[in-house]
Image (cartoon, rainbow, N blue to C red; front, top):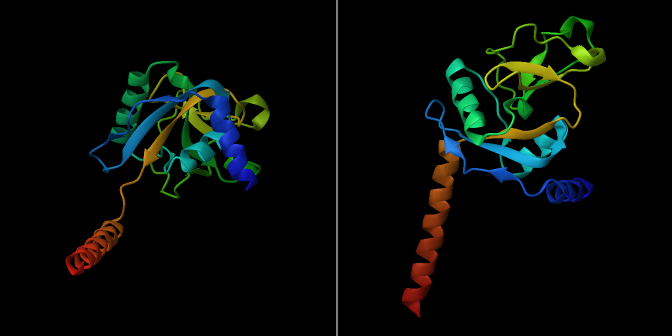
Length: 186
């Protein structure tokens, strides 16, 4: 209950959120949406908002997906280095992880692709940079601390599993059949 109240308060505080309709990328069939706020938000806040909107922070697993998402960010306007993505370090306190290891995607997908800017990740600002965003421009990755510096984030909406769509279709068919049967008896 507290999380819902917090998310509602955060949505009100960050309103209006500016975005365009989600755009589907043919590479994986997922849709992406660039969200910009009037204020700033932490990575954790962006992650919670993305999940409350039915998606997750964007996970970029190939050069072609990165090119597409970077294009969307540039298309949205604003400062392209102010957008959170779905990467984070799983164990930032482990010496062996810093600065370039233990990176993961919020979805659990393999961290097989990274497009770090020159000199990144560097775990700057006292060794606290454990979250992913674009810097110095869209398309290049940077590690950043979890504080309210970003003014936006990129949401990825996964394509429903085929089994889910089949169940939905079967359920809709059953509802339609039951209604038709009820009306024909009346």
